[in-house]
Image (cartoon, rainbow, N blue to C red; front, side, top):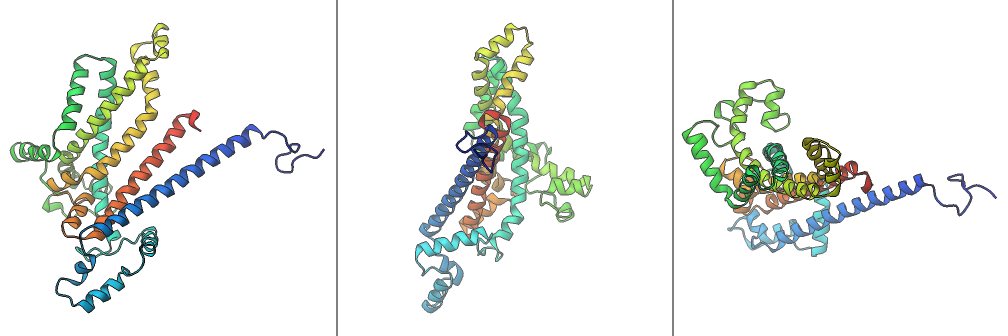
Length: 358
């Protein structure tokens, strides 16, 4: 009997464990990519429908109210609005895949170029806010669970409740009034003071990073004084969510039998909490942090408006108020793609941290 030419096994023999593992991984990767493609297609379908049902005539926004009927009809055909919807949608998908979101009516520039200019400001603000939320929220949630019913637990629950209850615009205005207007501890609205505006070479679009790369420490301190208040505001909302979820995860782990066994063996409480219980919540916590970061990218609109922060949220809001649907839909697609990418990264980290999911 001859061996199998591919694997050196007789025909009909059971596949090797390595081959079975490779096939499982291939199916997993294929399923993930298919899910990613379908999600992006659904996102594009939703934004396409929104662009068609909004009570805004895109042709009038281009030609103006005083255009003749002939000019209106010519622009209508030039924009492809006379074609069947399915053809329009396929053309829209093709344009987005090429990075073409159309031209902004407000700025006169390609929307992709506008987004590339404003997105780093939102990314920088959301990243710093997430770091604040993680560095404070995770330890607060762990300690609150370890000392359930204690003072720190009560403080953590009040912090989470206030974070979910207080309107962000009110906190932003009060923060500006107290820390900028009265105490003068932070910079005012905007990303930089007038004296530093345009002085730092634009490398990444993120002022803190660019000023550090240029070793312009006065500009770095000025940028930090402007970003710390809005970032802390976003970080507080991130902290409220992360601390609550961390506490919930830890309470579940601390009631498990393996924790009781670890304590019976004489392990210190710190070892039980951080080396055993916390290690097991790290996996779901990755997803929580990723979703929190995505929420800050999406939900920083009011914060950017209050602090005159020239980011993606302000750009989308201006586009909506001026009827610039290309800007609105382009920004919406970018935010949706960020959510999809963050979910994909959290799934990859989940598989990396938990060998059982491979």
